[in-house]
Amino acid sequence: MTERLLGKPIADRIQAESRGAIGARRAGAPPPSLVSVHRGVESPFRFYLKRQSKAAADVGIAFRDEALPPDAGPAELLARLRSLDQDPGVHAILLEHPLPAPFDYSRAISEVRAGKDVDGVGVENLGRLVAQRPVHTPAVARAAIDIARHYHLPLEGERVVVLGRSETVGLPTALLLMGKAEGIHATVTVAHSRTRDLSRVLADARTIFSCVGQPGLLTRANVPEGAHIVDVGLSSVPDPERPGTVRAAGDADAASLDGWARSFTPVPGGVGPVTVAELMANCVRAWERATLPEGSP
Ligand code: NAP
Image (tube, rainbow, N blue to C red; front, side, top):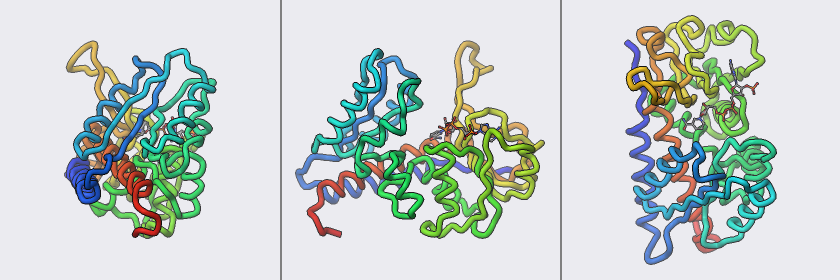
């Protein structure tokens, strides 16, 4: 029997905590303010923006999305980010990505100070994550860990494989799994596009975190029987049930792994809702840091 590891109960708990934290501290003060910057109104980020705006409204965060003109260049983007960073009324800033060349996502988001970089992906936050003292941890990596903890997946002392090494998803997930600060103590192997013989790398993995974005990558041909999969991958594929439309798909082939894997997170409904809830939690922490008097707990 293959268990579906649903994100909703975890996302609901995190959202309730954020709502409570805002309610407890507000007392007439302005609510947390989150600005999500993206390039072009017709960008494919509409789906993410809608999800963020709904989750923000749910907990009481003031959300605004700012589209740069489609012809805006890197200099305009940097200027906008610097200006938002200086604005005391803005507590949290997101930069939607990927960005096309010649934009440099990492350079751009690193213009934002660590306390406002709520995706935790600027160089300061990533460096601090390596040093085990992050200001904000990337929400998607935190969400993957939340799920693994909630469902008691085997991690401590176990062989865990992370597929993908991007600075925004795979790398921070691997760092959290192996770092001492989280107390997870997994024995982590990281695989990427140059990894040879994926089946061999996965052979004795108890838990797999897949952060690639290749639907159908994981099947019973390469996943060991009884493994657990946290599927972070999120891609759009044609929906055979509704021709002409697309649906979300993860890296794991659910049909192949059903009855083979011990458990996996479904897509949609697994990591996604927890990621957006963790993002909101980072916004609340950013607001608390910015508005609490110095020296407060
Ligand atoms: P990315 O920058 O394209 O990175 C993909 C990674 O996968 C790279 O490290 C790449 O290796 C590696 N890779 C490619 N083929 C591989 C293979 N056959 N075996 C093992 N590794 C392979 O993408 P990303 O931004 O990290 O995002 C990864 C996925 O997470 C995407 O599907 C994205 O949509 C999804 N995501 C989901 C959420 C959520 O809330 N669920 C949030 C954010 C992102 P190289 O480094 O060698 O190129």
